[in-house]
Image 1: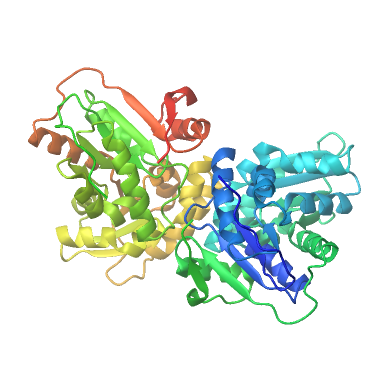
Image 2: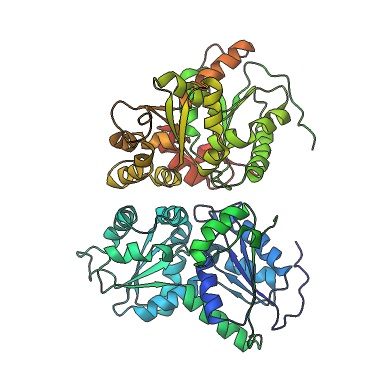
Length: 281
Length: 281
């Protein structure tokens, strides 16, 4: 397959943001806040979500198609706002996109965790795919070679966030189900002091998660650190847009109405279904 | 698109069973029990599951590809073991498959409900897509025009069944979350006396569901009624295989290991990943 024709990027070009569905809107929210002059094209592959339970080969195949589709919009930078895609497909996407910088969410999340942790014992909750790949574990150890990382797949959190069951006894009992084994007091060296929310759905459940965590545990996610990375990358390339109100385009591969309805909760601002363009990959 | 070339069916041909993933294995289990001489080819579209939150157009497009793939195995009958596909795509699949009989799970489930209900007030829990389509509601009213049907989407049940969290306080609290509004005592005419498990994942949660239902409520699913329909269709066509031990082939579009691991729970017998063939649709 040949690489798509790439235009020379300019600072007025939009930033592409790719996610398997609506979870990445938590990252888009941080990007909009930290890069208020930029325009964004957000693509959610809602026809084929979730990626978190799929194999590396399938996630990579789907992600390359989505990344190529976003290059058609002349993006100056591509943010992979999905932990599973960042875990499995980042090298393949970078190779395919050539000169366009590609920023994933795993390295920024690992950075945030290493900054927050005093003891170096860090817990990670993520999708089945991200945990199986060991992506956070490896990224944290690259930054802090003596860290200890305990990881747990937490698939039900994705369904809870999509359903909007983000607080209350159900969300808290599921949080306890996943977190109690990770934060046992009798672990050698004591329980972790930091929890990484290693899936873009999980910040939606931050209230329920913190309700069952000891108060001294720091909870971090990738969103704001990823936005800071993008800021640094664009600044270094002379592509940061200095000012002005940026626009956001929403693309989805299925069901604009559902994207708007569920996505509004994730972005914490209303999205109308008329704003969501259906695309075929 | 042209119809695939169809061989004249014979009784030694296998029965095709299609589902979006592993949920349909609860139907396959009933089919194997009631049709012990038959061979089966089961296809789970694990690369694109779940279908329950996707649009009619997308579900239909995926299902037609899967149905065509199963015709390559010379199937004498196709069972659509997924409620969402049965709700959205049955006419399109029947048109595409021509002479091969196609049996869905909605009509059999509606039949089971109408037989079980004395009051005619029937509750249905299903995926978002199946509920939105009104498929059970319509099928029940065709059989019993004075029935009252209350339907509720119960997406978290799918995630619970896949995760294997099928009993205990978490499963029961989620069952209560969905069922309490459906079975309120102050409903005009009283609460329903029958609950249809309108998604093939839900029989896995039968214990948790019955723990929160009043004991007089009947719980029905489509599996055994669907198997009885298939028996009747094959008998009428002279295609029922009289005796002998049938074989089962498992096909999946992604991750044979996960299909085997999760599917073993649904089929209630071990499946090894070596038994699962990966196919590309």
